[in-house]
Each structure stands twice: as structure tokens, then as C-alpha cells.
Length: 384
Image 1 (tube, rainbow, N blue to C red):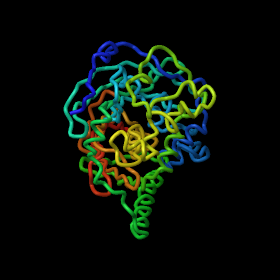
Image 2: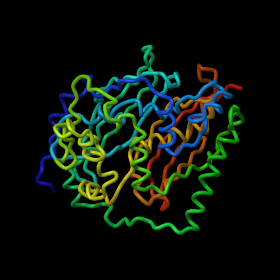
Image 3: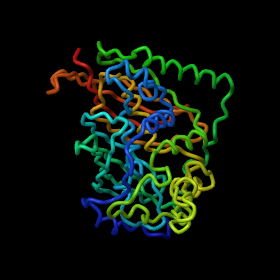
């Protein structure tokens, strides 16, 4: 057992209290949306090709529903990382989303309202005493209309204990053969054709038991993780300002994983998060191992975005993701390939909207069929 106490007493004062955090200074630019689609490896032309989008349902380029998490600072996890617990690090444990209707477009300006919802402490194989905290981020447009709400789960644990247990130390990075990579690329193109073939049409004739086309992402690498990171607006120097009280930066991070505010006054990379700060373990294996991970690993927020994109692409331009509740079980590691599969488990034709609501069961795995994420989502389909 670690000699460092797992004391959550400082967390209690933040529960149920509106908190501050970063807000963006500028409206969303069309290239922000394009960069997001590129970073999430989602080549749906609706989100980067204005000529294609102009011919469709919206008449212009719009953001995918997953883009909401790009319009806040801290992946939506800020409210779930409150209170100081010395010697801890965090991983994403899942995201629940409620979407309310407005599609984000170029020129919009989104602000975040945040609150720590609740937490519990459990004993885990990975790190012993571990806190699962849930925090809410509400995304509000420039007109005051609520765009969506995210309830993010943060897994906070003692880095020293996770390092001792090294649950992932026996995992070696897969070396893919040329033939295997060709097959991965074939499956990717097959998935892309599924939404390109739908185009601007409505998704009709859905039945319970229908299987969604498999989405394939990867192999992941330090380059792909870095590209993802740079697609988040919060990583742009000077893009945001702090508003209100938040203890996220003083949450008890290890010194090696903390931000350097003094250095950042001269060189913003010292406060970047990736070069220096809590996110450096994603692309710097030395620091990944410091917090109990075997090598570079992906972002929980990106895992959530991959799934919401998967749902959005299947729904098509005339559909809408209403709700998604995903539990994360394991991260994407360098060398891994991620697979997302879905199946229609229910169709509700009695929704007050008058449109059918499809319930989808979603499962995310890697090349070894290890479970990465699982959950259910509700998607509103066109009435006809």
C-alpha cells in the first residue's frame, strides 16, 4: 500500500458548487472545424468541404456533434478534477452527452458552465484507492441557447501506486506486417464509403438488429496523438482566458506533470499541457510510465469523439444524436488499432418529437479484442 494518503477531504467543498475555468476569446472559425475533423480522422466531407455541404440539408459546412468538446478548455473534464489530492494523476472514465438541437457553425461562440456533480472512492486493481468523480459541463451558444451537456467521469489515482502495480507492463507494442496494414486500410475505406454512399439522403428503413458498419482507426502513434491534441482549440497559445475559481491546476499533480506558470510567461509551451503538464504522458513514454502507463496513450475525450462521430456519420445529415452514455475501460495505446461496432437494439416510434428514436449498443475494442469502451446511445432518425 502506498505511504501517500488518499485524502479526498478537499474535494468535498467543490461538490455542487459552480466553478470557473477557461473560456475562449474568439468565435469558431471554419478551419477550426476542418482541423477537428482531420484530427479525429473523420473524412466526412460535410465537415470540411463547403461545396459538398452547400448541396446538403444544412446548406453550409457545419461542425460534427463531437466538436462540442473542442469548444471548452480541458476536454470537459475540468469540473471532474476539483480538490487537491497529492500525488495523483487522472484518466478519463467515460462521457455522457445530452444534445439539445442547435448545430455548431462557423461564427458561433460557445461558453462553458461547470460543476462537480459527485464522486466515489473504490479499490481498483490498477492503483488501489481510486476516485471516480463526475463533473458537468454545459455548452451555451451566443444567444443563450443550451447546445449540449456533458457529464465527464474522471479517474483519479495515486501515480506511485499505479507505477508499482504496472498493470500494463506486459503489453508490448504490436508490429504490423504490410499485409495487416493493407487490410486495416481496406476496412477504413469500406467504412468511409458507408457514409459517402448515404451522402445527403435520409437514413430510412432501419430495423432492430441492424449492425452498423465497423469503424477502424489507427494504428495509433505519437504522431496521431499529437495531431489529435493540436486539433483542440485549447492548445492554441492565447486562445482562452480563465474565468472564476477552479482547482484543476492544483489538483495534486506530480511535479513532473504540473504546469509551469512562471516559465509560461516567457515560453507558452511551459503551460501547454503536452510539452510540459498533465498531458505529456500521452506522447512522451517516459512520463507515461511515471503514471503507470506502458507507453504513449490516447485521449479519453478523443475516444468519446470517435464514438459520437460514428453515431453522427451513421445518422446522416437528417439524423441527430440525442444522448450518448459511454464507459471507458482501457486507453488506445501506440501501435494499437481501434474498432468501433454498433447495433440497433430498439426503435421507439412514440417519441413526442414525432421522429423515430433508435437505441444503439456500442462497443469499442482493439486488435486483441480487449474492451476499450462500451455503452448505449439514442439517435433521432428522420420521420420520412
